Image 1 (cartoon, rainbow, N blue to C red):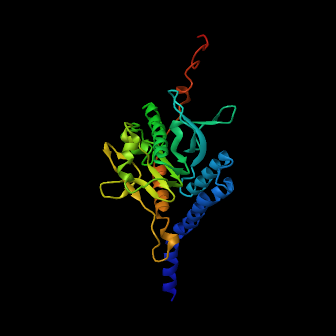
Image 2 (tube, one colour):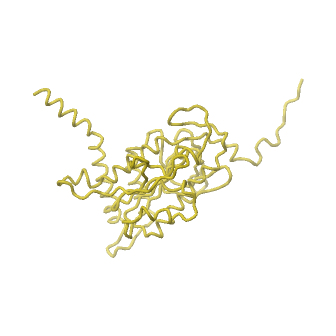
Image 3 (cartoon, rainbow, N blue to C red):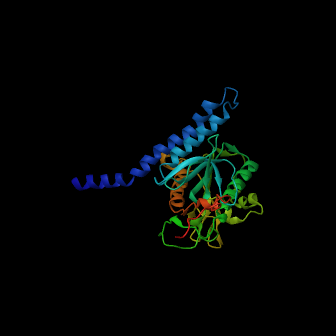
Length: 304
């Protein structure tokens, strides 16, 4: 009897994380699909207070992601900058190294994040047409490409394998890239063949700058597969480009809707953790950003 009780407790302990995430995921889906529209749409279906609607949805997504993002990282919104003068579009979700990112704000309290300290960038959308999906993915690819502008002699603050000195190679080592992701309510078109159409949405953009993950709450999660046909969150490893795949939501399985219906969201969270936890963080050398006037007009003490 005692042995049987121990077995039951051990089985339950193995499911603690899933049990907690299950309630979080269910709350996320309800808030994202229902509460947001109930609060910010009028009886005729017209959006009121669009700014607050967007911020509400971003908060919902951040609250979910906090369950799987390492606590050494933080969340923000704003613009990403690099030392060559590039500025990104305004990003909905920026996940960055909280310990080493300087607070750079303008007078309007808009925040700017050095690319070296940013680990992931996400866009939060409602229903997306194929054209809007294309626009969002291309914006994310432009942000991902900004990591190419980091000088190769920068010091690495965090490296998931070890912190020994090595070359920073964002085109070869996927951990040196940003994780880019898109979360939306649904895709307003047939997605049966989307895995074969995604490359076309990028046009001439380098395939290595593709998104890591797309989560459509209603439709499924889109990522990649490796040579073993296992889902993976990198568009390329070394010079090998990986194929797109879709993880679909399950239909009801033996009535266990809570466990299986949102399997695509569980997969998304699992791979978000893996990708973000493995991301390389660089030292943001501010002297590269402040070029004019630096080391100029210096008066040196006389030799005696």
